[in-house]
Amino acid sequence: MGKNIPVIRLSEMYLVRAECNLRLGSEIRQSPLADINLIRSRAKTTPLNSVVLDDILLERNLELCFEGLRIHDIKRNKLSTGMYMWNDNNLVFPIPIREIRANSLLTQNDGY
Image (tube, rainbow, N blue to C red; front, side):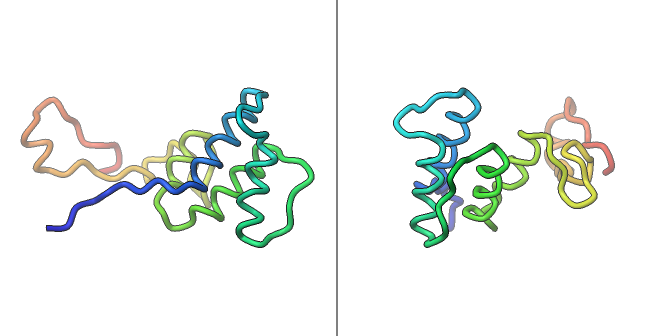
């Protein structure tokens, strides 16, 4: 029987560390620039001379494309995607009816 097994890629960990170090103004283990350039080097792209938060978020989009993490980045950073703002009801799935029937304390998400 198939199971969903979460996979965490090493490049994601470098991106997480780069973002955390940039936000905190620290360089724990590596600088944000070094982490980003490590990923860019592996991808055979031009290294950056400096890095800001938008660079890290763009690198996350490119590196982790189609892995289902973008929605979390959008909500965490309060960004928009296309015509939807981070808190738009269209970015939330409905709660399955069987779950609402099983727990009367649940209420359906707005818009469904």
